[in-house]
Length: 287
Image (cartoon, rainbow, N blue to C red; front, side, top):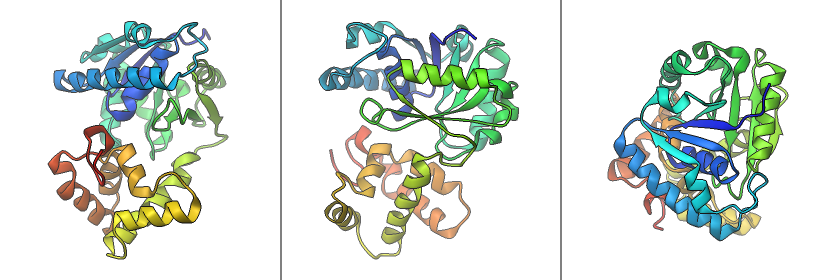
């Protein structure tokens, strides 16, 4: 199998834009896809900000001798045409909202327009790739590739296949992750939440429970965690970094009363008001 050189990233939100920019910064040809012109306009703003962030952080690149924002931008194309986005892609990374039916519907359309040898990867935070593999039409060339937020600093890439994922596809994605400046975390079997979110999600859920039961406000919860552990951020600060759409989608998909209450709380107090976290300048905190 030839090394991956061209990728398409489906979804240009907070994390999707980071996935695309990380690859472009490290020398890959990247197409960023989203559904309409408004979403792409928002993505262009994110990419401009990421350029300043990467240059300010002096991110090292293995694939480019002199990485800079101008060079990264020259390798990055935006489109709302799915077929055009994936026409030349060796790897398609899906980073659309955390909703099973939305993802399955997208894979159904993707399978009809992508090249026969193209590898598909989901960046899903909580869903198993087995939940999606039959919709891809290529279970041997499908797996999960999970990025951490603020990928230029927290540069892990969790790679998790299914029982059907071919060793060649798995190895090609591990190689891509390494060449795009990431540290591959290779999982030996499927686990919802991978390694990172298996640790992080229960932590965030515990914080939301403290809030929804009226035990403590976000500032108190965060202060307690920071002071008692020496951590740089508390759970509600982490929610803001993630962006509140993702925790809303996860909570609203769960049937238990606590998750439903938290989803309703996020929608009423933040999402309906356009307060989505760090990306919009306001969430639980103002930035």
